[in-house]
Image (cartoon, rainbow, N blue to C red):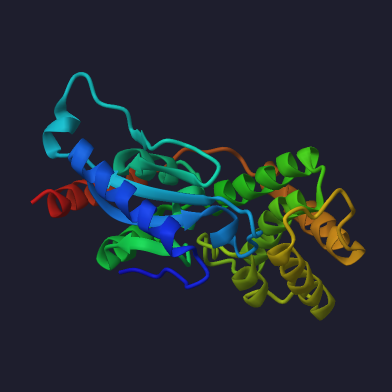
Length: 265
């Protein structure tokens, strides 16, 4: 599957496609999932936003039997436009089972360069079965708090606003631990007040045409919204820490072995 909006620069997209093909050829890996992350996929790009392609890859089975395993990350040259790198499937699954929310976000990215829809659906089913809402909530809470400490520009406020809205989504969807990746969908799927919804839309529209938003403050209505959501989500820090269950580990092993067999036939 592929879902690349017309708003993306076709020349840049072609280079990303070329890099992904080069990774597969140079490293002998399969890439079942390659998406855009960062502000473009999060729903609030600027005219000068770079491209953050992320992918999941699988090596040949023998590579996982070596006493000297290869790195579980593949990177391509980083520059002002391109940030293209990926994780080995084993790394991605281990992190996801241990509460890292990044893999779930990648699987729900609205921008897909190339993807095996069956792989995505099976991976989402795994995460739905093993994801720990407490760890996912704690992840987003601490992302927001770290970004809040670093916030020096209105542009960076979005990096607090998105996880705060994700925490709202988790509170309103108590049976799910897999929130949408992009801010507009998060807002749409939550009962945020109309004034908050309108302020988010207005700020996204300004960012879309402005290279630098400057050091001004966010609208008061959004500052209050963020503060309230982070205060409500503080309870995630009170949950007792726990590792993945034996059942979750077994499910993860089964998923990994199954995908390794499918992708390396």
